[in-house]
Amino acid sequence: MIEAEGLTRSCRTGAVVVEALKGVTFGIREGEFVAIMGRSGSGKSTLLNILGLLDRPDHGSYRLQGVDLSRAGDDEVSAARNRKIGFVFQQFHLLERVSAVRNVMLPLLYSDENADDGAVRAERALQTVELSHRAKHFPSELSGGEQQRVAIARALINDPALILADEPTGNLDAQSSAGILEILRRLADSGRTVVLVTHDPDIAARADRLLVLEDGRLTADDTVPSNPRRRPAGVV
Image (tube, rainbow, N blue to C red; front, top):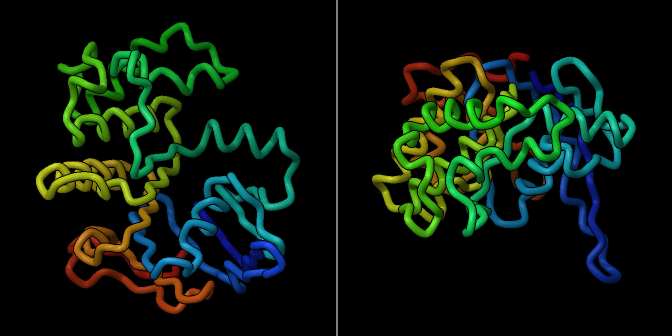
């Protein structure tokens, strides 16, 4: 699913150039649930932006489903991002004046696919996250955990192969967090690839593999021993 080879990325802050990534290499198989950990400034967000095609590396290559997108044209990158990747963030980013089902349908506005069945697809996505009974409710009428379920359903509307989740439980209580992690676990078990950024080792323990970044370098790539579904690490 993912092949990252020698990824480097530098960022400028005023007159200072910071090396956010320093030759990061790894592979992720289809259907794996991978957690990325690291301290603030370790390069997690930069790496996630490259995996999500929101940024490009200075050097190295990034292949998604066998296609090198690190030097692809803007149109190809945009199409791959819209069709192959679903994003889930710490902030839910829901439109307050729009119902849950309408929020889920929003990515279809940016898709070149026929969206005539958009309502049906949105209802199906809400069923996947066990929230179809709240389809007509507005975000203000939903709990934080329910809002994050809507955000996950929105990420699923275009049937992406890859789900990128950036601290998706950061604003949730323990019970809601457990529900979100179980949904992500089921998505991986059904064949989607899930990459989760977290600072919490207990959350990372729910994944198949753990990648650790320190100062822009990949310092660990290990299976998660406590996970009975774990797969061999480092295998593409």
